[in-house]
Image 1 (spheres, helix red, strand yellow):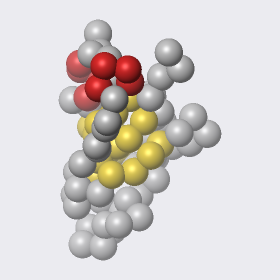
Image 2 (cartoon, one colour):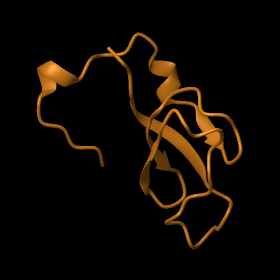
Image 3 (cartoon, helix red, strand yellow):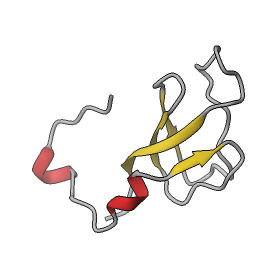
Length: 78
């Protein structure tokens, strides 16, 4: 679970809530840097601008290689 401290200074409501509903498969290209949640085990991981494709979950042992990701927190330069 993502935690935060300065709500008014750091967080901003998005104009595109649909990006948080999209499910991303391993190997697909991330549209945004941010914190993503594994849909198999719940592990949260950072995907940065350097990441060219979604990796398998490093925490998932039950369904190795079969996980998908959902965006939790979108990182911006604003």
